[in-house]
Length: 509
Image (cartoon, rainbow, N blue to C red):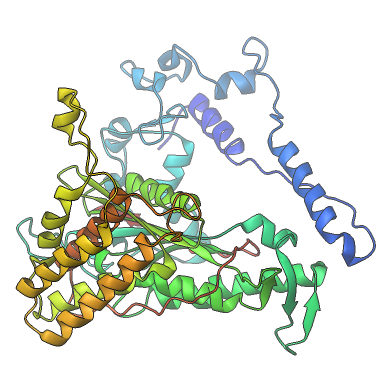
């Protein structure tokens, strides 16, 4: 593309400073009994290194390299570009952080037609070095150096329809599923497990021999178990037929994947089951074993992918309010409404949601069922509506009442009208009753205060969130029924270890 020397200098400068690598080495004390203290000292040292801003101050008057790579007001002249290139005073359109080194409109006119290069240069975008590399790294590196190419690029429309690589332009009026999900799985209390603080004893994989406490052997075994989860278990779960997910990343206890909206919760449960099963040989003093939490964001396939990924990350962080070992769901409707639905794994929420979706899919329950339950429960919410808030009215509210009993009766009424099969109706009624007992009982795990019953609005919001999620699953349903894994009973926390990455291209369609 023949950029100016100054533009090339800025590009090189941004690449050189893009990655920040920090490391720390701590001498090991003899004996495994000091492992925890040595690990903690190393972590503290590394944290100190990371918080140190180690860079040379820019001196634009004397430092030519910094002058080329820094920010300038008159970059059109500085870069030696033609008149009318004021865009070089601007930031990267995609990140808003680094200065632009290329203008899509300017470069598009000079780009060759081969390899689709011209199509990758949007004429309304400005690129910094990192975003320019992301657009062309396969052509500049993967193909010439490794013989690899991205002939198929997954897209969010295809993912919603269980066909991640279907790049055919879809009919806007098509009845094909329109919602997809971003799933983020993460182990609980990562640092505490791998540092040895959580472990009381563990069992060797080959012999089953019990080993007390932590140490270097424990660390190796724990890291190997995390690698087994990421490399051997995760891909098969995410990409299984019927789940049809697209794995972005699997490393240690972390997973990031894109899935059809109707298979996301099942996938989350299966990932959690696999994680707990793989690490069940590590036991804390209270008998608990490593567990994990999951955040899921469901949105329309045309929603900005970055926003949905952030929503999934925010959902996963809500696990702390539930005492970890939880799944948190954010539903982002295209109309602008957002529904939040958070649960402990053991509450049976996924089993109930699957049962609702399966009943509607089998046509033994009306598609109106979840909406009818929502309509019956919403009047009991104590929270004021936006109109009441705007009017400044303070309502006495319903206060605390037997929300579980009232909800059971309203749900039973909806089931009697919307479910035709008696066996299915009884099964759903029993599952709703079990779910209510979990979320409304005194000292329920979902309570914000241990030992105290959750508020009326908390219980009702969980039921409404569940029904809203089931309705979304019905709207995006494939021909295959949902089959979620049976949740394990292990509780505890997890850690990080060896990482493995799956770097895949993804785009909105």
